[in-house]
Image (tube, rainbow, N blue to C red; front, side, top):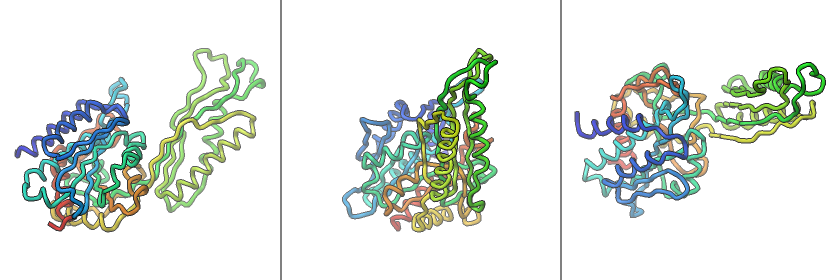
Amino acid sequence: MRAIEQEVINTYRYLHNHPEISWHEFKTTAYIKEKLKEYCSKVITFKNHTGVIGEFGNFDGKRPVVGLRADIDALWQEVEGKFKPNHSCGHDAHTAIILGVLWKLAEEKLLHDKVAIKFIFQPAEETGDGALMMVQNHVIDNLDYLYGIHVRPYHETPMGVAAPVIIHGAAKNYEGVIKGEDAHGARPHLNLNAIEVGAQIVNLFNQIHLDPTVPHSVKMTKFLAGGKSLNIIPGNASFGLDLRAQNNELMTTLDKKVREILSTIANLYGITIELTHEDYVPAAVLNDTAISIMKKAIIETIGESNMKPSILTPGGDDFHFYSIKKPTLKATMLGLGCDLRPGLHHPLMTLNEEALLIGVNILFQAIIKTYGL
C-alpha cells in the first residue's frame, strides 16, 4: 500500500478512536493542525471556536480559490449501554479523506503554483451551526468553489459508487417546555396533565397535511414529565421536536403550522408552551457548474457506470449554509458509497476503509478539472 493510502487509513482510525462532540473538538483540531503544518503555507485557528483552516498553493489572486470542507465533530450517543462521543456519522472519514487530498496534491509538486486550495475543517455540524460560525469568521469570503463529502449507507449507495450531489432536505429541531402546576392524583380537576397536553400536540401534528409530492414530517422525539411519585399529576414537561422538509419553502410552511398548533393548545388551556432552543439546517442549494465538475471527476476515477446521478435524502447538513450565505459560490457535496452498515447514526456503524481512497481520488480529480489541468 502506498504511503498516502496508509496515512489516510491511519488518520481515519485515529479519529474514529478519539471522537469529540460539537464545539469540544480540541484534540481533533490540534491533531489536524499538526497534519496541516507540514504542507500548508498558512494554518489558521480561531479564538472563538475549534475550526482549523489550511491553505495550499498560490493565493496571488490570479486563479479561483477552491475550498474542501470536512466536518470534524462526533455525536453524543449511547453505545453498548454507555453515553459517550461516537463517530457514527462519518466525520472521521471525511476528515481523513480531505487530508488525503492535501497529501496527494503535495505529492504532485508541479501543481503547487497552479492551484489555490483552502482546506476547511469545520466544527459542530451535528448542532447545525458550525458552518455559520465559519461564515462569520469570513472563511468563505474569497472562495469561488466549495466541495464537500459525505459517506452513504450501503442500501442507498453501494460500495464503489458515488454521486456528484447530495440533495439534502431542510431539518429543524426544537426543545420546548410545557409550564403548569402539579396536582394530586385523586384530584385531576385541579390541573392540566402535561402528558395529556403532549398527546394532543402529537395528534394535531399528525393532522398537518402539506404537498404530498414533497417529502416532509414532524414528530415529537423527546417527552419528559413526572417523577418518582406516581400519585402526582405533572403540570410541567419538556419535549423535543424534529421537523423535516425536502425544500426550504415547505419547511417555512411546516414550521409555521407547528408554531400555530403550539400556540393554539396554549391559548385553549391557558398554559404556557415555550420553545427554548432551535437548531436548523437548510435544504440543498444546487449549482450546475460544481455538479458538472464533480460528475467528470467521478467518471475519471471510477467510470460512468459507477456514477449515481444524485442522492435525494431527507437528512440535513449545514454545508448548505455556505451557498445560502454566498450565492455566487459554486458548491456541491460528493456522496460516497462505502458499504456503510447498519446505517448513519447507528452506534456501531462501520464502513469499508478502501472507500476512503476512492474519495481522495475523486476530490483530487475535482480539483484538477476545476483548474482545467
